[in-house]
Length: 271
Image (cartoon, rainbow, N blue to C red; front, side, top):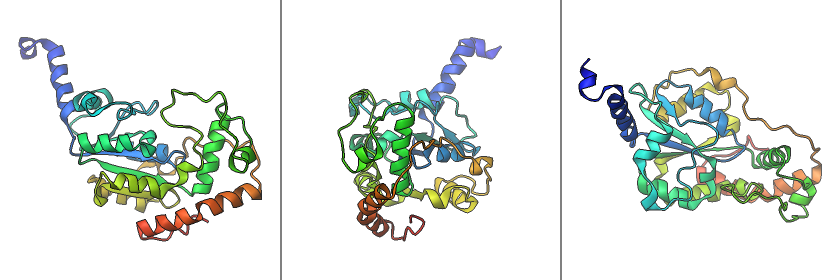
């Protein structure tokens, strides 16, 4: 066979991997967060589209642009490591790493190495997001404080806090300061590169999902079967009383107003 002249299957494999490593660098997007706001659902809806190739594995997330200096970022390695399954049928690649959301260095590295990347935020009612974040940590054995200890008394973080986690898992309140993280990314990416999705308006909304497909430049007539899928839901084991809910509502109220002004839209879906 002709391929044996060039070194057989191993040579062909190297060529294919080389093509993958350089493909779509100008057609790429990253789901940066926010945690507990439907990022896994968003990943699945995008991954189902035949023209979109999402990074694998889903877990653990790539987090490639964390803990590296600019000189240590190798884009060929990045694409060959997380997108080697992509082929010529895919026109755009995408990654989900929610730790990028609150790390300015990640925004800076992405901008410096993949300047045409589109940034996707998906945001959920911040009160519900904060509670979901708490219960997720609680149910996974990271959190031992009560809701009152966390949000009212503001007791210090558990002694068993895992130092090798990329971002503080206990930033329940701060992570809901959406407007500040969007403004941080606006320092490195143009407005048309940043797409802010509202969870409550997006889930199981074919119109919203297809609008996102259009934004990403793929067939916006595609209908994903995963649009009604519920993924990565937390199991609530603690009753949330009115004091906690009132505190969170008041905490996020001015931030919600700032976000509405930034997006130029009212967020009435957030009670």
